[in-house]
Image (cartoon, rainbow, N blue to C red; front, side, top):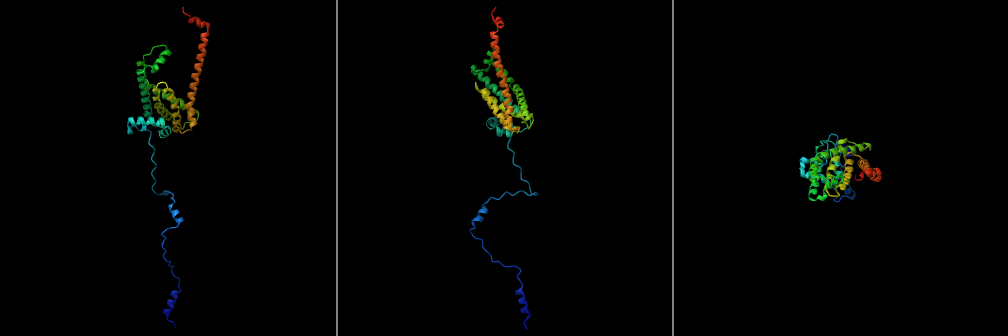
Length: 279
């Protein structure tokens, strides 16, 4: 009769093992090429979970230099602003605040307008032929004191600049409204025109060619500036800026033509010739 202990040993051998034992395998020293390429692939950025901390927002670009006058100082702010507006107007006006205190842009305009008047007066005193008042004296037929006229121009320059920029910005903003190119208020247009007009005013102090250069550069930087500040298209900004200029040029041309023909008719008028004869 078999022993009971042998039956228990036989049952223990017949039962399936709870788990299979696998031999340990060492990882190869050199992984396959496919695994190495997958490891070198850049991993997609992990998105923050709903309950996790939010990423800090990207820092805002710094304001134009003149808007940071207290931070960087008067001299550096003035020089940098001139370079930014005249050379890189698109990038500059894209960072310009749309609203805020108007003291900064109007001060910028008044200072540069006065500086241009001072430089023009000094050039007229050093080289009398460059004085702009000699031609005006010939047109009016009345002698004008260049020193007194230059002093009056310097004193009145800030007031003239402020009145002119409000009128100019108002006309441009009106045409922006007509061409559906406004996203912000008149204040944004005024800030843009004040900066562009002030920066280009310095060219007027250059003899002979200063005026045309200042006018052309003003048109270019104002179109670019309004495209950024009013967030409109370049075509609408150009139409709003160039249309008043074209209208003014056409009016001046018509006035010159009318004056030419009217002067010729008066010269051939016999009644007018009787009044011109000496008594």
